[in-house]
Image (cartoon, rainbow, N blue to C red; front, side, top):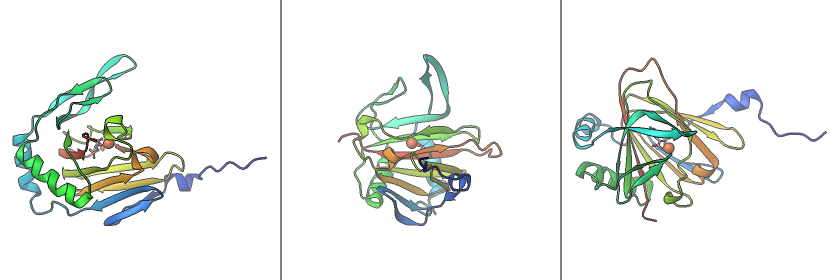
Length: 208
Ligand SMILES: O=C(O)CCC(=O)C(=O)O
Ligand SMILES: [Fe+2]
């Protein structure tokens, strides 16, 4: 009988954690800096909410429109398309531009756009996906800056089902690079006991 290389339950549900700095899982690379914006995060929160226009959005699933479980805003030189909706191109407000420069330096990558997600409380969430829109290029680098309530962020390797869980704390920066968007999916699960809001900025490059 052929042996099937399936992970055991213990392997499947054992979470790996990230250490500070860069680390590789095969051809995927993660960068993790929990203290990236520590010190200024309270100010950032206030200023960002003043500069950013958050909107409710909808997605089309099997021909039906649903509102997405979070608020969002898009800034970049090109429109952002996802699940049947388009967010128009819009210049970055000054604060987002300066945060983008800092993230470029840390991530050693070029960015020109940012998707802002606002999670009103622990009910707001994001399901399993990869950031693999063709506009992002073959192996996109994505830098994710978090402010406000800490939320778990889960990653799962498509083939091995390996899992990583990282608590995206206030002021932290997570970078996904290499083959991450091919080999892994990620999600921000619901956390019903959390009543405080969270802001997340994912910097991306659409120019190519
Ligand atoms: O809010 C987060 O940390 C996840 C955001 C995300 O995965 C995305 O915008 O594609
Ligand atoms: Fe994502």
